Amino acid sequence: QVQLVESGGGLVQPGDSLRLSCAASGSGFSINAMGWYRQAPGKQRELVAQIISGGSTNYADSVKGRFTISRDNAKNTVYLQMNSLKPEDTAVYYCKVIARVVGLRYDYWGQGTQVTVSS
Image (cartoon, rainbow, N blue to C red; front, side, top):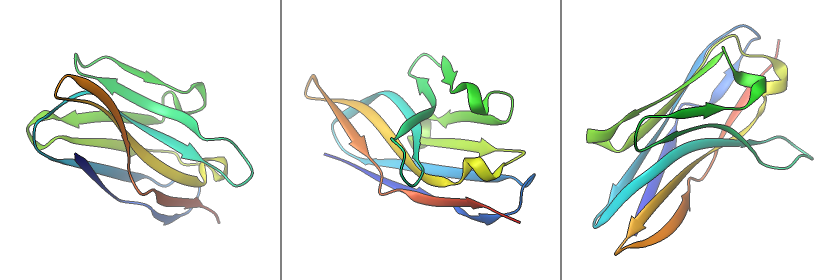
């Protein structure tokens, strides 16, 4: 079993920055990939950024050049540095971890953290 704890959301103004963190804990697991999704009111959850075990990353077109995903393997923690935030970035952001436990793949989700960008 893997537990995820997210932090870092909040209310900011357009152009500001925020950093989200998501720490995975538990035992007997290995992480294949970590990522961030977001869901705005009335919209479907969408991928924001993902980083796989080899270090490769991919981003939604809407955040390329503004957001950066990174990972601290020693801490099993993934970060999302969000710069030049826009009102359309307002959403609940969810951390997702793809892990293997006893050789089987499981997807784990964080509880979500609210990011609001407003003047």
